[in-house]
Amino acid sequence: MTLDNGIAELLTYAERYLGLDKRDELYARNRILSALGISSYGEGKAEGELPALPDGILQNIFDCLEREGVEFDPAVLGERLMDAVMLRPSEVENAFWVHCEHSPRAGTEWLYSYAIRSDYVKKSAIDKNLKWLSKDGRLEITINLSKPEKNNKDLAKQLKTVSTDYPKCIICRDNEGFERAGFSRRNMRTVSLQLNGEEWFWQYSPYAYFNEHGIAISCAHTPMKLDGNTAEHLFDFVEKFPHYFLGNNAPLPRVGGSILMHNHYQGGGYVLPMQRAGIRIPLKSKRFPKVKAGVVDWYNTAIRLEGENRKEVAALAQDIFTAWETYENAALGILPRTDEVHNTASLIARKTKNGYLLDIILRNNRTSEEHPGGIFHAHAEYHHIKSESIGLIEAMGLFVLPARLKRQLGEIEGYLTGERKFREGALGEDMKIFVPAIGRLMRGGRLSPEQAKDALRDEVESACKNILGNTAVFKCDGAGTDALLGFLSACGFDE
Image 1 (tube, rainbow, N blue to C red):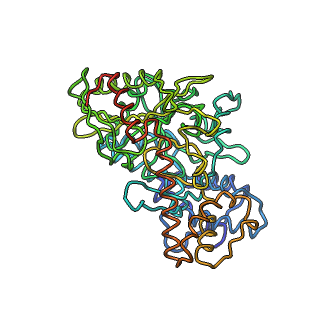
Image 2 (cartoon, one colour):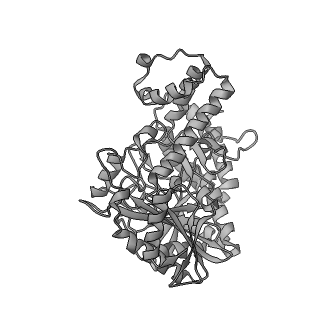
Image 3 (spheres, one colour):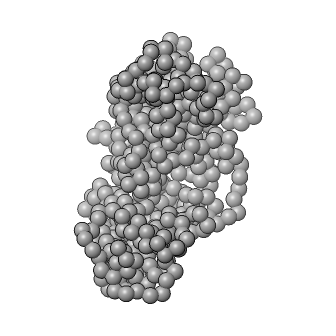
C-alpha cells in the first residue's frame, strides 16, 4: 500500500459512508495532504474491498508514514484525517433532523452510525472490552481496556477549579473541531437540543459503555446541579427520543460523575439492569394517587415513580428530593450537611406505555475515619476490584471496571492453577491489594483453569454487589427498610 493509494482509499470510504460529495473530492484530498504535511499526490487508487470501519485505512496511512520516518501522534492525526473527509457540523445536524422526521429512532441510529464510521466512537476498541453477565443475571460487568482509573481526590478538586482555558473543560461545546497538543476533537459532531427552554446539545461517548451511549450537555459551562429543572430537562429529552433513557449523575464528589464542573446527563438506547428490576415495596402517593410508586428491588436505595402526567411525577420527585436534602439519621450514618452538603440523588427518566417513569437513587457522600473514601462509597475491602466513584451507570448495575484487572486477574489465575508460585513478598506493588482475596481463593486447593476463571468471576461479581450495597443509604435489612418507609411516609407515601 502506497501513501497515495491510502489517501484514495480514505476518499472512497468517505464517499460511501460519510456523505462526501464527489464534487468535494479535490477539496477533501487537499485537506488530507495538509493534515499529512505533504504537497504532492500521484493519482492513488483504492485497492481491494472497502472496509466498514476506517481503522484499517488509517493504519495503512500510518504505516506509510512510519516507513518514511515521519513522527506523528496516531490519535490526533487520525482525527485530522477523518475531519478532512467528514460533513461539517451543520451538515451533520441537518441530516440528523431530516432522519428524525421519519422517526426519532431513525435519527439517532443514523447519527450513531455516523459517529462510528467517522471513528469518533471507537467501536474497534469498545469491542475488545471484556464483558459478562453475573450468574444471577442481575449485573452487567465490563473490564474497560481503554478507560483510565480515576482518583476521587482529583475529581473533588475539579469542582473547585475555575478554568480560564479555552475550552473550559473537555465536554464544552467549544471542543467541536478543537485541537491542542495531545488532545483532539477534530471529528466530533454534536446536535442542538432545547431542554426546558434552555440551550443544550447531544453527543455520543467515544468509548461507549452501552448501545448509543451519549451525553446531553448544557451549552453553558456551569457546575452540575440537581434542582427543580432536572426532571423537566430529562422529560423533555425522552419526549423527543422516547426510545432512549436519560439520567443525571449525582452532582457531588465521591458519589457523582467524573466531570462535575459542567452540567450534563447520560443516556442512550439501552435498558440497564436496575431498569429491569421490579418493585420490592409498592407505595401510594397521597398527593397524586394516580402515580404508581414503589421502592425498587435493587441493591442501593431507589424509588420509582410512573404516571401519565409528567408534572405530577416531577412534583413527587421534587417532594422526595426536598425532604432528602435535610434528612438526618445518625444511627444509619446519614447526615445531610457538615462542612459540605452530603445528601443528593440521581434521577433517571424513561417513556413507557404508561407515560413517564422516573427512578430516583438516593445518595450521600459523607466520609468518616473508618471510611475516608466515603461511608456510602465502595469500602476498602473491595478496592482491589473498584475504587472509583460509583456514578450513574454503575449505580444502575453496569460496572465499568479498570483495565488493570485483565492483567491482575490473569496473574491470580496462575496462582490458583499452580502455574505460578505465590510468594507475597514477590508481588508487584499494585498486586498487594489482592493478598486477602488470593488467600481466600487459594484455600480450596489447586483449581483447573476453568474453575479458576469461574472463581475469579465470582470474586468480581460479589465485590460489585457488595459495592452497590455499600452505596445504599438505607440498607436492605430491617432497620434500613423501617427507616426508609418512615422517610417516605414523611414525603406523603403509604405502603
